[in-house]
View 1 (cartoon, rainbow, N blue to C red):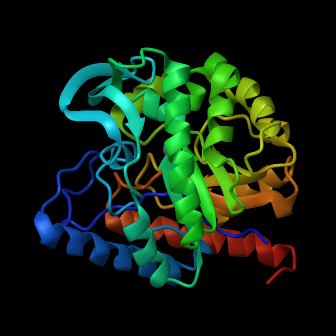
View 2 (view 1 turned 180 degrees about the horizontal axis):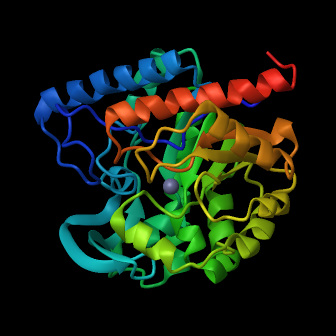
Length: 341
Ligand code: ZN
């Protein structure tokens, strides 16, 4: 009951990448970099195991950024041709690569890191891949010039990748779709269809992480414009409830998402975000437990998976480690109340 997991990323050691920032440059190169990524993955697996997290990830130690880490290995995307474009509906600008030809996955992208990660933990393993809509939103496109069509092309290569990773023993494939609460109409028009194509034929658990973004300044400023109640999910949740995705993540800690909205996700497992990644405050177990109890008023307890709100890559390692322990301890409090081990 109440198995714990994380949204995906964890901070990297300072010897691997510059700490406490997104898109942090690598501190190593060549074979030393590849070895460094594996060593860092061992550390974050160990830290999750020591903290008692039930469904672990490799903390995204192998990628510089959650979107481009996948795209770097896809043909048709030219990383030398970067363009500064507004992303997430112009909330902020990023130097994005350009689609210049047909989207093709010439070989598995993440197989080596998943094989390595799988070999080094007996826990259930989650792996995160950017979702089609978010990929499309993080690219310039000079080839397809049609966002749904480009999203379906990416859904096809994501599906190829997901099937390979499932065969290597991944228990949960999570698609990261922060774009889902930016483009509400498009989610219903083609976002869910793209997700379905991406998970087609998978037998492992499938999840989607929609969120209001990391705790970076641009996102914090944007959140201030959303008003007292973040009601974007009123539109998105009913559409997701009808989808074939098994799990949906929702940030509930320190957010203004009205918790009763969780009822709109009836039938889904919900990764309830009980850890705020936009603050260095380490939640007490009681604070975590309180968020879980609130979710339990709207979601059956056997559908709740306590989780972090979002990735923890921009945090310090000490803070992230503290939050992992808070996550486990808070879930344990509620389990004890319910008489579950
Ligand atoms: Zn997120």
